[in-house]
Image (cartoon, rainbow, N blue to C red; front, side, top):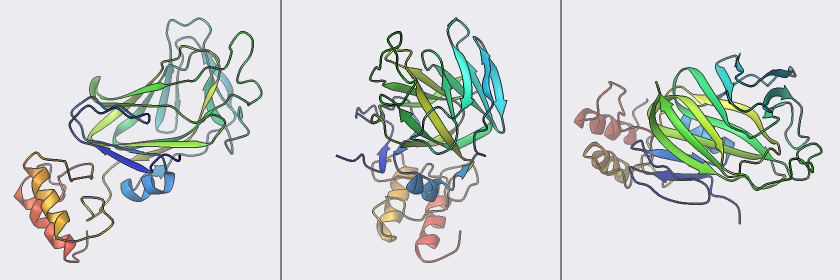
Length: 258
């Protein structure tokens, strides 16, 4: 059964095979790249270059807007930028040991996406020393060291998967932890960043723009995000969530430009 392209969680712990958010930020998870880009306005980072191994234990390496950091204690880890999987077009980021990876963005964002391959039939992914393991990843979103949200994912084997997250609160670091503890290889493909929320009057994500979107926005302003799917209820972008946002949403529903 295919994974849904968009799943919204609001201010509550919930458990699905796709993800488990536990912090206060409203989290929207995506498994479709086009839906993620349309909802968030995310832009792709430049293609990953073929740099080969850029370092071992404790390496911190910056590429464009992203800074990658691997374990400071795992003596077997190496950080590699190269074409490791034929399933993903282009190069990938991968490691020679357990995939515990921190990615810091040069400024806070509201959305982060990436292509991903869990390879079980990819040459070099597994070996007798590092047998293939079903890898469940936990992902934590942090801002200046403070957790603002989290989820988990388990990618289908030997498939080019996409995962994206949109948060109701900005974050500047994405922390990946491989819960399997295995040293077989998984691969990160191209990354996407959303610096600000896209203008989308469909506040309840039902595919229509009408009075229910105004109602969902008013409920969100009052703390009930049950029917609200956007990253933030600060519709007018003034830094506050209040009646002015409801007014702005009403104007947009009635055809006013963003």
